[in-house]
Image (cartoon, rainbow, N blue to C red; front, side, top):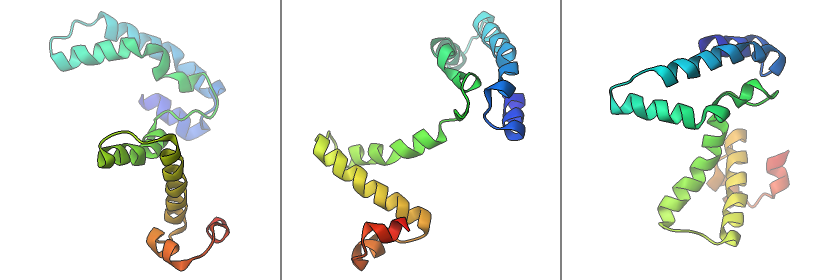
Length: 130
């Protein structure tokens, strides 16, 4: 992974620069598949690599695709927390309303405005977007 990340740091998420790492990735998968691991954890990872082989290095084939899923994990974290709090499922309407509030909350966070302060202020959405 280190050479791939170094390429990304130098050239960004451009397929024409990342394409050269495809052979290294193939060698990695071949070594992982042929290895005779003994521990349950290593065997589990071996199976997981094989199962997700066609997905793990997708970013090498498309411009602008992040090599990690930090953005996706961050985006879904709030929905997972909601599910744990309500201990069940929500209606589509409830999820839309939650997504709207979450969007406003995230905008406030990025702008350095307290969410509760914003709600108490009575300011409209346009003042946050500015």
